[in-house]
Length: 90
Figure 1 (cartoon, rainbow, N blue to C red):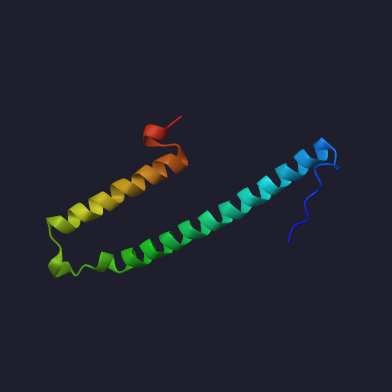
Figure 2 (cartoon, helix red, strand yellow; figure 1 turned 180 degrees about the vertical axis):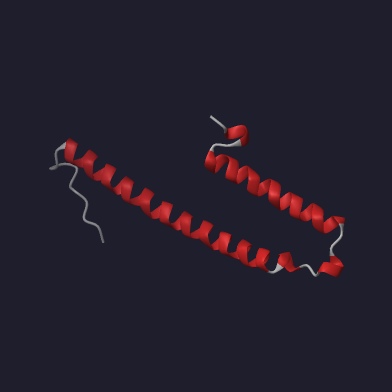
């Protein structure tokens, strides 16, 4: 349990500083949680890729190619945004 300063007896600058500290802590905790989600998704995608997206060579057709093209286009949007490339180039 976090003890919060009494707003009546605590100077305003201390209240603002405490609020800013709690805000930074919440942002850091949320960042770490989102990063863990991304890491889990990337691991699952890597495992699926390592297994050739659950495709046997005899089963591959244009529908499978289209599905991979769709996946690639979604990942390209992410990498372009993350690395400032494509439409996100500076």
